[in-house]
Length: 100
Image (tube, rainbow, N blue to C red; front, side):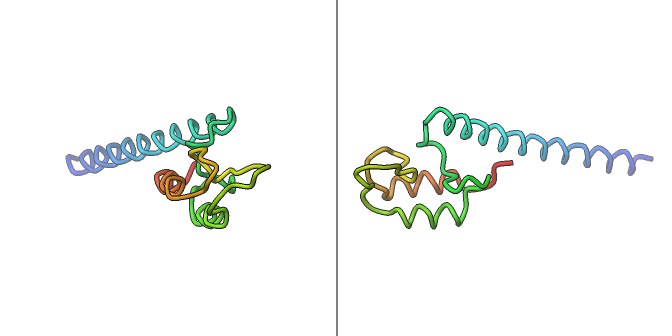
């Protein structure tokens, strides 16, 4: 009986930790989505808008590396410096991972 309750308690604790971790990721992704909706792109690195900040976004950023075009959109310029560079790369890497 004790072994069964102990195993059950351990399972509940693990589920609670998993749920808390997932909630934290969801909260961050909701904030990023809100920022993108209201034009605050400096905090949002999901450039290909696939729900994951990953390799595709990194390749997009590297393809845009350098000065932004005089007219037009420059979504990889997170720091609004009119140039895609190291600071933008660091923003992308700081947001690496999935958004549920």
